[in-house]
Length: 390
Image (cartoon, rainbow, N blue to C red; front, side, top):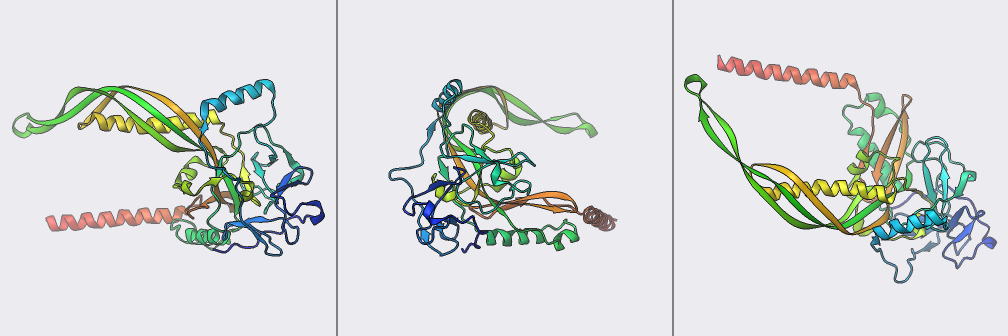
């Protein structure tokens, strides 16, 4: 797939950069650029070709990953202890060369590498000032990134098709020229692995029927016999995914799944050159608490299945979590914020699969007409049934 040329980035004087370097810190340390070996401009990540490309002379450069670098699971408890020690000692940040931009309108915090394609906030559409760049706070480094697979043009086409398919949207909305300048954003997620050991105690219910009453009151009722049930089992959880950002609806992020996590690569700054990377505001410990809730829900389903029968009662579930590991991964999203009749709406496109979810206005006139049509149809069917019965 092709990718539209990016908005012209800030030019870099070739004399200020080393063309052989994999990345140079410039602009008073406010960003990291990848200089073109042909003309000295900033290379940006090209989605269609999955490599760095110069928007001026067309020079291309493959993404580079350090020799021997791989995506590794990180020790959860060890990192919590490390963070605690650093907070106490006031040690340097865990991630180096990181800088952030704060949106004064909605409060979003994003990191960036290289020249930004856009200078507007992807969450509310307000302008971002490069002069507002600040040193990053102490944060856990990224472990992996899933590069964009869907380019801007494809995302735009999917949006148009999505708008046309909204049956209950106002006609004015369908005719409205929604701004289709998506912002490419990498959103942070935690993934958690854990080996669990669960003990449970409960009861298995087996239904049976009996006939009660007499005459006109004679009828069948369902009753249940209960039997004690208990047991234990192990289950390994792999890559339980938890959004690490509160700037986007959890419901919408869940709806964007599945993600092609098998296509993740070890984190390299080159993959996010020219894009925003949202900073996590759900910390590691809180992230695991959310992952644990998801694990508990799946464990409860396992317990009910093991108890069996027609019905289940659970008296107690006790689960031990061991060998807990995590990764922080960046996943690609095309994000659009638009306004219709003064109200903001947000649309998201999964940057790896093209799946689209979002908010849209509703036409209550269309909904009311649909309800009336349904009621009329139900009435007609009832009249036909009565006519045939008579």
